[in-house]
Image (cartoon, rainbow, N blue to C red; front, side, top):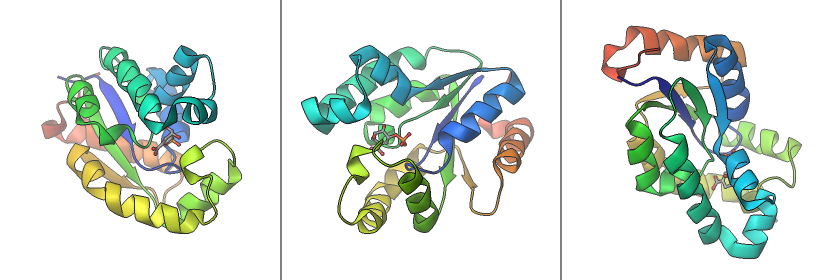
Length: 178
Ligand code: S3P
């Protein structure tokens, strides 16, 4: 059985906000892989990208996921590109139900614009186009990794956590046990 919930999805789909609420509701530990990468490196995500590029960042992310995957009763908000390395998902799946959050490109654009400077991959001249392209190329990775998918489009964060809890409790094929 699995007692962790790993939230995956593109940047700006609400993984951190939903994850924090979900963890509080279930009385689980809340973990963000991005925050652990920053703590391990002793610098911000943007600085890591500047200094060692995306490849260096992904190496750190793999190390963090290796540790995080051993947790129990945790909600894990995963960096948006963590799914690109299958080893991360294989490790997480041992103890975590993988929940994919989706949102439309326009909602994503709005959310990431409100948090400017925090996402080096979208720090570009035409973020709308980059978001659409990246969503398209990453879709197969998200779909393959997900045990269940929640479309966040018309739901409030509270409705999203209720939907997730509902599924975890009612769908036996997810093998979730608190
Ligand atoms: C990334 C998403 C970010 C962070 C890094 C790379 C990505 O996390 O890990 O900037 O490749 O999608 P969020 O999804 O929490 O923004």
